[in-house]
Length: 306
Ligand code: SF4
Image (tube, helix red, strand yellow):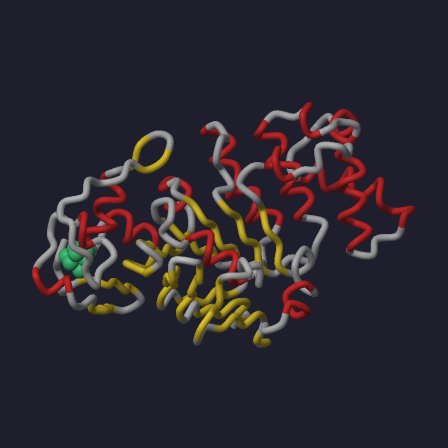
């Protein structure tokens, strides 16, 4: 039986500001076993990145988690120390823009050496290992890449370097935030293959609005306004949505992201999609009901709103 790597429950994630308090995430929960891949999908502001930040213990100071928990390999993570002992070693983050993530003032060799040093790799082995990591992510001219500054790389090359940096770890959980943004179609297709080849046993959480990328993950969770809307096998969710928001999300797919569906009514409802939902009913103002059949789950006014 494969090991459960992550069990996550957001509880209520609350942000306080001068104007009052806002709930950023509610009732988002999932678990990931080794080798499994889950895509979190939704528009900008749906709660995807906040989910990732909370499970890395990197929430902004004005945001607190109430009633939620992050369990990693059987241990509940609570303090900053718990998280920082794992970040970059067992929990590894792959950013959406490799060029912005890499240190512009250091050559790629130095950045790989830094990552290897953090993992305790002896100085005498760092050059060979840095070369090996770059070869693993598909670079043929390793010498040129090692001697380059980030600005000398293309977006796709920089993204592969960030994956090479991730490979300098003992990752059990990979968090990739919009990892294919700005990449061409070929590089996007290669990304998932590369991740599963480099980290076959790691659990992988992919945050994306790229439906093609989501369809390559085993499971997906659809978020809207910080609330889960649908969850299940990606092929099933994306080909036969049970929920109007998922349906709208798929229909709104455009080449470079998601086009927001129009606002249809001014009131707010219990469902975060209420103001824009073409299938809303009076009852959606006051309740959002959870439904499930097997491993498929969705939140909507009734079991067949789609
Ligand atoms: S609960 Fe109502 S408003 Fe929300 S998606 Fe379902 S039908 Fe639309």
